[in-house]
Length: 234
Ligand SMILES: Nc1ncnc2c1ncn2[C@@H]1O[C@H](COP(=O)(O)OP(=O)(O)O)[C@@H](O)[C@H]1O
Ligand SMILES: Nc1ccn([C@H]2C[C@H](O)[C@@H](COP(=O)(O)OP(=O)(O)O)O2)c(=O)n1
Image (cartoon, rainbow, N blue to C red; front, side):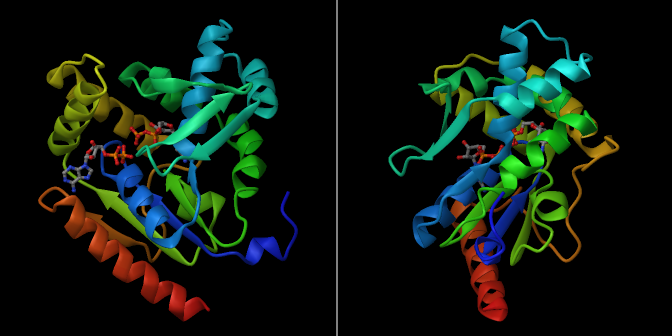
């Protein structure tokens, strides 16, 4: 765990459902502030993938917790890419964690309270100077409840499915728009109704519905809000 002095480093949390633009806005903020990103979704995605590869069922809590504790996982925020690059055992995981199937597997293992507890300290260790941008579902509610600025991004399921469809197409990953919409709705439901750390805006979070906003418009609102909050807490 970090010591108490490093735990005073500022944190900006960005939570929201799939395809709401969290990763995109986190990257813009990271570039502007020169802070690293915690892509917490990538942790759940790698865990889901590792469990699948090891043949561990999403009901096998003991084995999943063991895997979550021991997962040899590191992250690099590459300014040249627009995503956090995950390394498992020193090897880049690549786009295997970015498929829709990997998102569903992540959401399934993420329901288990013991798995979430096992990952808590690992996520909190990312809070280091000069500051951290934390992207996920429970960053502002559970992992960093004392964060300086809390943002909740959202958009209609249709808009988010279309965005994800185009994003996967650009990566050369094939998908059907209709199936993606169903999958997003299913994942929303699971993430919002789980008993531990459900997807909800943190108290006092700045909520932005990006359905009809461009990336630049969302970014300028989020940036202005974050700067104001950071000033207030310094
Ligand atoms: N406001 C927006 N308008 C149009 N496209 C967007 C907007 N925000 C994000 N996108 C695009 O939607 C896709 C999903 O965004 P991403 O940041 O990966 O979402 P999340 O991390 O919330 O799942 C990306 O291709 C991104 O470029
Ligand atoms: N802090 C987090 C981050 C992700 N999860 C779970 C729930 C999500 O459906 C999956 C995948 O998250 P991820 O942020 O990578 O997914 P999207 O990019 O938003 O589609 O992981 C979580 O439970 N808590």
